[in-house]
Image 1 (cartoon, one colour):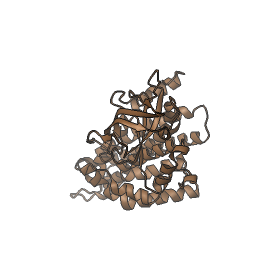
Image 2 (spheres, rainbow, N blue to C red):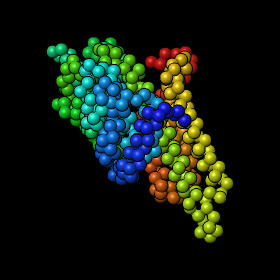
Image 3 (cartoon, rainbow, N blue to C red):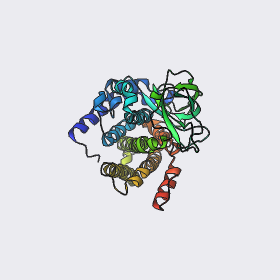
Image 4 (cartoon, one colour):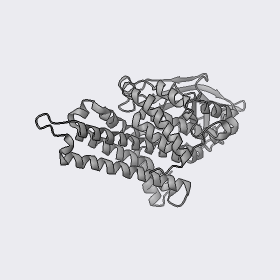
Length: 383
C-alpha cells in the first residue's frame, strides 16, 4: 500500500531483514525486563538505518516520509519499543537537518550510526501541551542557560542528542519558544526517575532534569521565539506519520499472530482447528479490514504531503489518531479471539495489546488530536 519505488523497496527489505534477525528475537525480553533495546538499536546503527532521513550531503540515505513510514511499520511489527525510539530519533534528525550549519557533525555521526537523537518537548508543568513549555532560557554572554523538568523523554539517558524546547528569553507567552540541542555529556543533564510503563516498556520514556545547562549560539536550532514553527513544521509531520506507521505495524503483528493461532490450535476432542469456527474467522477478517483501512489512510496522508493541498493539514492531524485507534481495536479483538492463550502471554499478543495503548497518551494525545481536527473543520485556529 506504500507504493514504493525500487530504491525505497531495497531500504525496506533491508530493514525487514534487520528486524527479523535482531529486533524481533529480543522484543519479548526487552518487554519482560523493561530494558532499553541496546542490541536492536545497535543493529539499526550498523545497517546505517539511523541515517535513514539524513541528507546525502552528510552521508545519509535521504529517504522521504513514505520510506520512513514503511520502515517503521516493519520495525513496529517486531518491537514497538524499538520502533518508538527509532521514530523519536528520526524526529530529532529532521530538526538537525533544518539547521544544518549548526548540526553537521551530528548529522554525519547519525549517518554512521554513532549518534542517537530524540525530542524533549513535554514538561511536567505543561503536561501533554508540548507546544507550551513552562521553562525559560536565560540569556548569558551571547549564549543561554537552561533549567527545565522534562517529562516522558524517549531514550532518556541513552540518546546522544536531545532537541529541547523552552520559552525564548524574551517570550511574552509560552508559544514563543526556542529549540536547542542539548547533548548527553552536557553538565547539568540527568535522568530524574526510572521508566515503569504499562506498554512500550523498553523505550526509556523517563523524566529528565536540566540544571543550569550552558548552551552556546551553535546549539540554537530554531530562530529565537520560533520554536513552535519547527515543532509543527518539521517534527510533527514525522511524528504523526511515524506514530501511525508503528500503530499499523502493531496491528499487523496482531493479525498475523491471531491467524497463526487459529490455523494451528485444535480442539483435542474433535481435532478441529479453531479456524473452523465461523465467529473466530469473522473476527480475524474484521481485524484484517481495520488494519488495511488504517494503512490505506496513512497512504493517503503521504500522498497529500507529497502533493500538498487544502486537506493536507487535516490529514496530518488525523494520521496518528486514526491508526492508533485502529491498533487498539485490532489488538483488543486479538485478545478476545485467542482467549486464554493470549491472556497467558502466548504469541506476544498481550504485549501488543499493551503497546498499542501507549501512543494514545503521547502528545499530541488522541483526545487533543480530535480537538485539533474539530477546530480545523470549524475554521478555528489550532492554538
